[in-house]
Length: 218
Image (cartoon, rainbow, N blue to C red; front, side, top):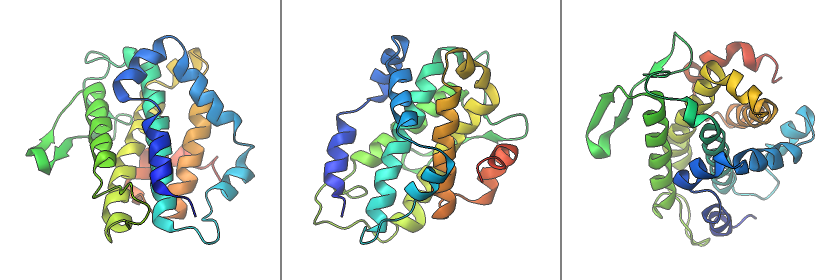
């Protein structure tokens, strides 16, 4: 069984949201996504890769993937963040039909209209805080995840992370092509979709902006 505290240590040694923005300038972002892309062997291998291994705890399995996808979306966005400005992307959206408002009950933020960049950076900070909260992501392998991790916490995080993919696809895909990250983006999203659909972590409405793209996943 995978010890989540070990996974957490690996994640902690990875990219910090602020550092990722700096590193993407010198090409580190591209290198890290390439590492991920090269570790996958195609559509069939990804379908196998998302399957819960025999004897593995489903909560730890989902938590470890959540950390991976957090890092993937973080690095991908940081690679194009200098092109995502308040002028070019004044609202957080996935195309013209889907716009997102930020809410955070813990900070009394209700339906705030942010620029895409501010929304995504706020989202990344929010996920980071969740990961650092030992009541949500226990570091001690002897401590179990809460009962609502599978039903509420993980689905909410995945439902917000998918919006980062959506914004990049609809508003910065040509940018990823120019810097050679389009294949890596596609591979990461492919992996993400296979995972969240297998474990029913994202509602259908969040998948709507990807209707055409998802056709090619299966």
